[in-house]
Image (cartoon, rainbow, N blue to C red):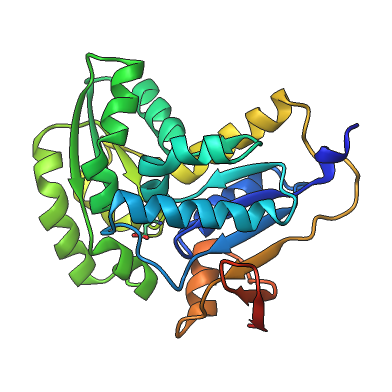
Length: 276
Ligand code: DGL
């Protein structure tokens, strides 16, 4: 067994949305230790330029590398859409984004050959899902739309409100009318709104949760490299954010689906300022 097996998995996102991926990694790989960084001070990444998101993503990865992680999971669709090449050349360890796993699951699930993709403005404008799906099967038709209000609604916890359903209808009716049979939830915030999104599409449309698919790819990747942790002791997870917004703990626990352990507040140059 090499030393790297006991190293943690690094996960970052623009904020707390990536905790949906953490929850899945914990479920699928309960022995693994996780170091999470949420760049809450600079959220949202969705409307920002590719250059800015790439610069932030490299800084987020640097922070995780400083904690000796064995792999980095980019638990943010926006960063995965525009910064994967830069991250892969910057990091000397495997970097796993959320686009390819989501695209693969969509291609394997569609029967009609029409796939819907929803995400932030940055993710949709990048065309990353369209390219990833087309690389797997060029005959699949992709219908995409950005849903910018879903991020604040998920953070607000308005999962079952009437207003959320109204907004979901507004964004998603064109996709439903395009007769897609699979929709990729191309933003790590969206699984929180899955129930409402499903109400718009009805039971015949399958929703692909990129968190679930990404955790599967992490599990397969680590197993393939013989890097799965196997030392028997209970894992210790560490959570870092760059700011603690109002009601942070309540929001973060909703995304994680479990009580949040101690969270440290850091700047991206790794200087710990306080505990939360
Ligand atoms: N979690 C981010 C994503 O998956 C969305 C939030 C943001 O705009 O920063 O794209």
